[in-house]
Image 1 (cartoon, one colour):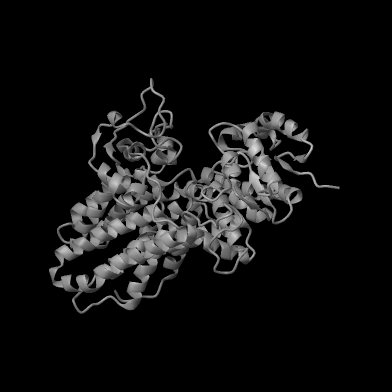
Image 2 (cartoon, one colour):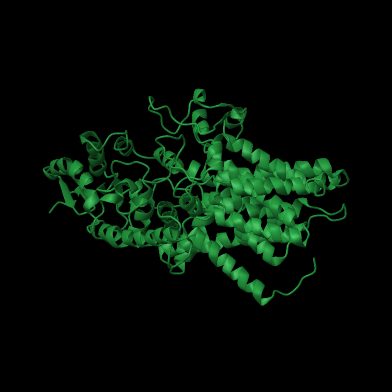
Length: 607
């Protein structure tokens, strides 16, 4: 395709398209952020990185005594730390980092569309369609998972450049090989789920190319296949060295089943997610009281428009475009794995049983046959939220649409343009409501600094060792410690918590979450940490260290209690802890200081 200068219209359209996607994702610096809880968690790592050298990639302020390696999302946290060094406020650094990766994903989708001969306008429209998929923007609460899904376009752009060889004389250049290696490394340090999607999708595509292009098989065997294998082995080795382990604890197969994709989620959107379906009364109410898994399984997976369009595109291209057959195999595999171990069609919890997110096999329609993969295969056995495989399927179907549009005559292009526009329209949330939420999240982030960080700085001196008790999955600890200037054993993130606990003193372990509230036994363990010098200060928070990070100052379940006084919803926490604090105040060797958000306990200094 010969290069032609961009017209004014194309430039304007490109800017509008990208700005629209950035707004849709909620990543507008200095105005809004896509999420709160995961932003707080991530920016804790980023803030801690800034306390070391430019190349620091471990947190030394929380999860002590072992330096903490971020379980996923280093590709987001480290760039955000650079923005902090430049003077950005934490929420704006997070939004800017997300915006930059969204731009990479958007441009990659555009380049894929252009690769097959689409005009710039159609390629831009296609890129908007890809980035408007609910599986991307509605995973923003999972931070780098959302970015990883969006970046599937970047990963498979790298695969296309390496795999799509025109002739036996057309060897991959060093820059193409380097691009592929960097894409693989980026994917493993962005998110483990999409790393596996990239690996399986690229492997399927390469196997298909080797099977169907016999004349190119020697170059595939000599160069492409070794590059593919070596890149993934190298990237995973780097990740294993960084994280300090090669694998994580496996989940029960009933969890994989519970988080499998229910076919009804694909076809009928959930109420409150897609504005047009809500207006037309075509959405249904869903909750964890009725369905297995969690809300992300039914909030992010409506995809009927792109499925229909992708299947039509495949039917129209499969005879003339050999690549289409390889791409449909990727889509089928992604769909198959997203179902989980059992087929579910509006499968609900029995009213006479108290069940959580896990699902017994007896309540499913029938087995899918892939349970053995989730049990035995490395990588697959860590993808417990199996519905997320649908992102790979959706991307492959979008890819087929863009190929079909490129190979269609002028009249057909107009029809397909309308189809793509309709897909975008059906994908959209209530934009005004989403924008208000994203703006409010940024405000809450700043309120954390104003209300909580400032209070902690007044009550706790720099470099002191702090223990928040009882410990749980303490998302807040990640941000509070490096920002307020102390060090703490506490840490947020399931995988990070598992790693940190192995190095904690026995008293810290004993002061933790047993499913019960703080009691005298846990307090005693905490006080022993003070007397033996393991910790300098105990902090008894009046807020939930996990959920308050998602909706400050209280978790989402208590948000309705907020009136004009932001401390109203903290009263139940304070009332529960009041008897214990009064007991501590009577201890002759302890100094207890109370504040609106927490109480501190330390040894009395000798006069």
